[in-house]
Length: 402
Image (cartoon, rainbow, N blue to C red):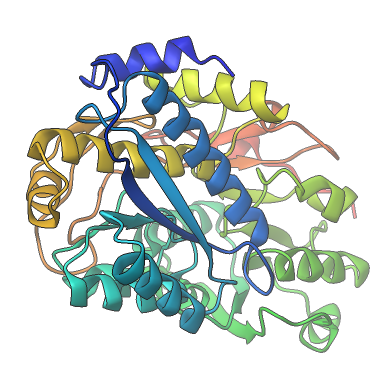
C-alpha cells in the first residue's frame, strides 16, 4: 500500500535517506492477541504499529536501516507479559519495547525492562503506579489515571449528580482509577455520594452486582472495565432497566466507545451514554495525524480510534530517539527521550521529569467528553460536551424519556 503523504511527513523528521542493505532495527511489541486480554485493543495497536513501520521503511528507514517488529502475545496476563518482555529483550535483542495496553501487564513488563536497562514506551497503560516507579527506561505518551479521573470528577461536579456507583475491573487500572475518582470527588464535589464495586474482568454474569441498583437507582453508573467484560456489564445494566435511563446516566471512563466492535456488542445500549475519550474527529491533529487516519481508513475501511494514534506515536518516538542518538544503544535512546520535544500524530510530545505520577509522562494528553445520542451513531456525529482545553457544556446533555 502506497503511503506517500505519511512518508512525506516522516521526511520532515529526517528519516528520508535512501535505505541500504543493513541489519534491521528490531523493536519488540507485546500485546494481547488472545483472551482473557483485550484482544480488540491489541488488534488496534498492531494496526497502528504496522502502518507507521511500513511508512518509515518506505521512506528509507532510520539511520539507513529498516525497522523490524517482533510481536508477542501476552494474553493480558502479567506473567505472560513478563515472559514476553524477557524473550524479546534477552533472546530477540530488541532495542526497545512498546505496545503495552493493560496496566497490570505493563507493571510486570517494566520490571524486566528496568532490569535490562531497555527503553520501554508505554502505549496505553493508565495506572499511575507505572509512573510512580520512577524507572528511567519507561516513557509514557499514554493517558494516565489521574488525568481521566480528574476530568470525570469535574464532569460529575458540573452535572450536579448526587449519588454515583462505579464498576471497576479487578486490575491495577480499574481499581486505581476508581480510587482516584473518589479522591478527586472529595476535592471537586464533596457532596457526591460515591462508591465502587470491583468485578472480575473474566466474568460473564454481573447481574448479582446490578440487581441491587434496580430498587434504588443511583444518579450515575460509571464503567471502568475493558471489553469484553464492559460490554457484558453494559448490556446487563440495560436489561435490568438501570442505565441509561431517565433517572440514571451511564458514563464510560474506559474509552471504549470508539472501538470497531462497540456497536455490534452493545446495540441500543450505547444510546445516551456519556464518554471520556482520547479521540474525536472534531479534535485538531497535526498533519501526520490526519495522514495516519487516511492510511488506516484505506487499510481497514474503519474510522480510526485513539489506539491507532497512540501506537503510531510510540513507534515514532523510538525512531526519533534513535535518530537523535545516532545509534541503537539503550543509553543513547533513553537520553534522547528524556529531553525530546517531538511533534507526533497527536501533538507535540515531551516528558515531565518530576517524581510521582507524571514522571516521564506526556502531561497534556488531549481528551474530550462527548455523548452518544443515537444507536450506531458514528463518532463524528456524537455531541461534543467538552473539547481539548474547552469548558464543559452540560446543557447539551440529554437523557431518555424513561
